[in-house]
Amino acid sequence: MAMATGTATGTMETEDTVSNDWQRNISVYRLGLSNYKDTHRLQTRLQDQRRNGGGDDTLLITEHKPVFTLGRGNPEPDLRVGRSVVANQGIEIIPTERGGNITYHGPGQLVAYTIVDLKAWECSVTDFVSGLEETVIHVLADWGIRGDRKDQARGVWVEDRKVASVGLYVRRWVTMHGIALNVDPDMSHFDLINPCGLKDVEMTSLSREASKGVAMAEVVESFVDHFATVFDAEATYQQVPGKAAART
Image (tube, rainbow, N blue to C red; front, side):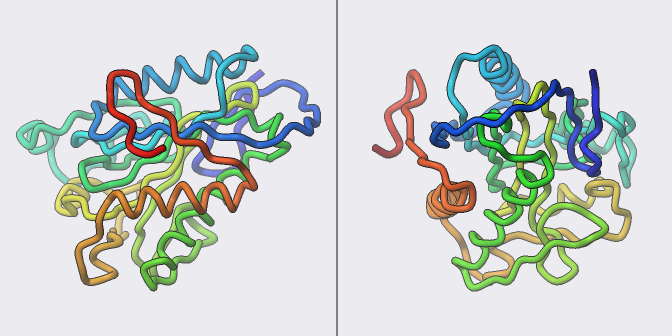
C-alpha cells in the first residue's frame, strides 16, 4: 500500500506500525565526493536490508558531483534555461523517488542521507523531517546564524533565503534520501533552476551568511553531533570500505 506523507517533501510506502523500545543507534559513513547514481544505489541497497530486518540505521555524509535531481511528483525539470545550457555545464538531470521538486547537489554542499527504521525509532515521518530541519538549525547557530522554518515550504531558511532542502522516500517505515545544507557550493548552478519549484526563491549558503570560509569537516562534525542530540541517538563513525577512517 502506498501512502503520501502529507508533506511536499516525502513519499511513503508503509505497513501497520508497532512500537519498539530499543536504543537508537546510527552508523555514520563519510563518503567524500561521490557520484549521485552510485550513492543512490547504495541507499537503495541499505534501505532494502533495513526493511527486511538486517543492516543498521545509517547516516551517509557526502558531497556530490554537480547534478540536478527531480522529485517523484515532479518528473519534469523546472528549469530557468534550456536543457542544452544545463548539458553544456556538464550537469546531469536524474529522476528520483523522493518527495519535493528539483534541487541541486554539488561540491561544497553537505548531503546527509538517512537509512532509518522509523518504526523502531518510534518516530513519525513528519517528526523525522522536522528533526532533520532542527539539526540544520542548530548547525547554523554554531556559526552565529539564525535558521528558521517556513509554513509554506519545508527546508531551512535564513530570513527569506533558503539554505537547506529536505526530501524523503519512506518504504515500509524505512527512510532514504535526507537533507542538503549549502556550505559553500557554486551558487550560480541554482540560477539554472527554480529550486524546489519556487520561482522567486533566493538560495544562500552557510559561508555566505557567515561572511567567511567554512571548513566542510567542521560542518560535518557539527551536523552529526546535533543529529545525535535531536534524535536522542548514539552516533558511531564507521570506516568506509577501501578508505582510511576519517574519525574513530
